[in-house]
Amino acid sequence: MGGMRKLFLGAVCAVLCAGLAQPLFAGEIDILVQKLVEKGVLTYGEAQQIMTETKEELRTKMAKGEMDTLPSWVQNLKLKGDLRLRYQWEDKTGSEDRHRGRLRFRLGMQSKVNDKITVAAGLATGGSDPRSTNQTLQNTFDTPDIRLDYAYAQYAVTPWLTVKGGKISSIKKLIFRPSDLLWDSDINPEGLSAQMNYTLADGVAGFFNTGLWILDEDSGNTSDPFMYVLQPGVTVKAKDIGIASKSKFQLAVAYYGFNDVQGNTLDNAEGGPTLDANGNYAYDFNAVAPGFKWGLTEPLNGVIPYLEIFGDYVHNPDPDNDNNGWLAGVKFGDAKIKKWGDWQMKYMYRRLEADAWLDTFPDSDAFSGKTAVKGHEVALVYGVGKHTEVGLDYYQMERIPESDGRRHILQLDWKLKF
Image (cartoon, rainbow, N blue to C red):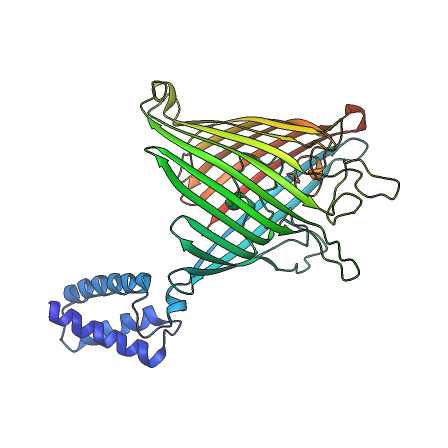
């Protein structure tokens, strides 16, 4: 049987060489097996066994990049994507209620250039807003654009140092980010980033995230705005701590530095910070931002599968007032949604004062991403199958002071990953 399988594998490889992985390659294998059965070379049972073993061997070779008949970049190419369908209701002070159907489609690809370098790129729906890839259903069935979401190169310098450059995906992978108080999850920074990870002791690891990111470029101005971040942090893992079977605690402190932002304007600003007489930012936004996350597996004798407590804080020392922001939250249920019946619930309260942070980065669903806002968010996610989930997200937000307006948003989602 082993000799026959090798003979058949050789025949399959010959087909590959001739057609160089035609779209119907799997169908060609089936046809070849059927011909061998018809000529009496194989029995039906032998054919099925050879098919199973051969396809498994081909998958293994493809995963290892050992298929001589295919370019290595093709063998190393990985695709992933997701589709989200959403109903959204909005109630704003002074406006009529709004009902919208929205969708989000994203497709990403990644390929290894060599053992140390990886190239990745992604496409997504939506316009040029860096904080949203949603596409509203409108305009009598028009055909929306697909745009470049990210494109970057990653260089694994050492096992503990990785450098990335380009339009990098995504902010939540570049820095430790317990919540979306400061950063909307759709933001993909542009520039250079580096991440370092190292073991300090048994169960204790340190990390350091840094980045130099471009904010704008103007051919008629040599003072182009940019920013940088320095974020040291620590991760502590423990077992059998009394109230849970496992515990993971993470703490980091970020310093954000900005160049040529004060006295300037930025695209995609939503409002909130104090402006000068020319309509530009009146203050600088160099800020200190600590954050933490504490996850407990099976706390309180397994009453729930997972419990997480998290928080963010930011302080901008330039202005004397309205220069702080904070968020406190709790998440419980299953740590991840993987299958039918998995569930997760989350609650957060945030307060982001006017000049604590730029109005170009915060969660766009929290009063459009403005500063000078506060309020509650409740979210529930339920798994309805493998890689499939439904969710509810509700925001009750208001401006600071409250007389400047209130906003309620309800989002019902169906998410599918592939």
